[in-house]
Length: 379
Image (cartoon, rainbow, N blue to C red; front, top):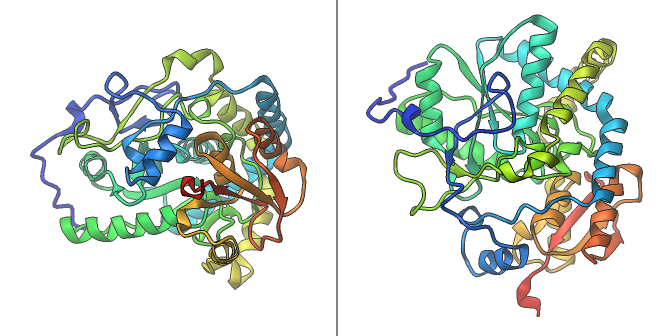
């Protein structure tokens, strides 16, 4: 592997945004723009996005979760903590077997950040291997933050990058990552591996995963309060200079609502109980050739929905429990489709009720539910 990364601008001078996580767990390679940007409500942002402004040029208002919604988060965490821990163990073991331990974990901010911390914690607990972990920005339509990648390569010249996210939706970020790595490798004569490791891969678009079941990972329930109090990432030319990391905001005012470390600690506490289940999970994946392939079956659901509901923009379709949750939290939903009512969708139903969004049953192939964004041009 050849690193020809010019050290003309050292981003270590670029202020790393703080988070509520320990720096032993993760370092966010993001510029703090908290005082420079004003949040907008979902309706304002949706109007702007549908008029052509890129979603990464704005920040949503971080709403304080309702008491009912937090109850669902805690319930989901209690119910699924062992299942998530097992999926984390399966991913971590497969990464180790496939790629060795001379790695740097690079999670995709911000949903990837808790996943990266859990993988790091598992390998530290099980093998006393301490993998450096950074969280960086990747933006659909704009690509990855090249300055953060260059920083990591300079800092860890003898380690390989392993990209990490929480789950797959319809595979847009998987494609974005592949394209970004190809461009970066051609530009800087590097050989970065574009394979994405995720806890859950319902879209069937990666081969390094813990499960392909579409289930509630409670970190999908909340925004910054389960992501180290860090906002989603921002890239706007008047805020982000040529040599800057992409930007974000730290929500210090939400410190009393923060459950970021509670989530991590609750899952990590399960690691001592899961050896047999992890071994079974790995055996199940590796014993079937189908499980080692990417079929992109989730895209078939999306294409069918696009045709049946006459949706012009495929980005208005957000499949899977994680993405549906984010539609209800961040966007202006049109309707929610569910395969069938279940405990894992309780928070979806609750959010839909709170926002007066209709919920309909629909025979989905790969997912338990799907969120459809409202086209404001319908009105």
